[in-house]
Image (cartoon, rainbow, N blue to C red; front, side, top):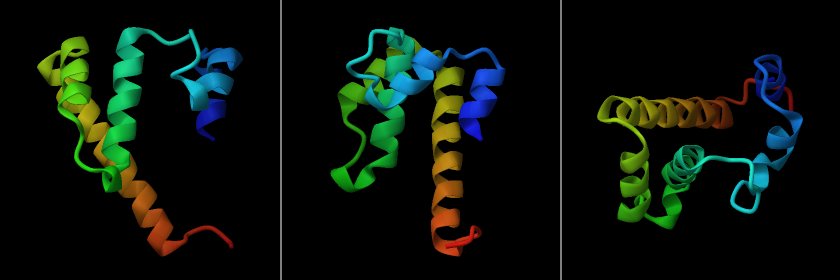
Length: 92
């Protein structure tokens, strides 16, 4: 669903297909990389809290308001994913 929406909004197939390996792909800006890194760190909290350097890099790329919006977006998407994992609203 999200891939179709992104493609319909004009995102290239090349970037969509390389998103899982964004660290190795040359198609993402420093700002996008900071957002992806913060998203991964904020999702994989079993690895520990978000490292200062990850937060600092995101703070360098985004205004205070943008950073707050990004953090809320990460939190809400993670909450929906966790609710789905627990409630299992899809057929198994």
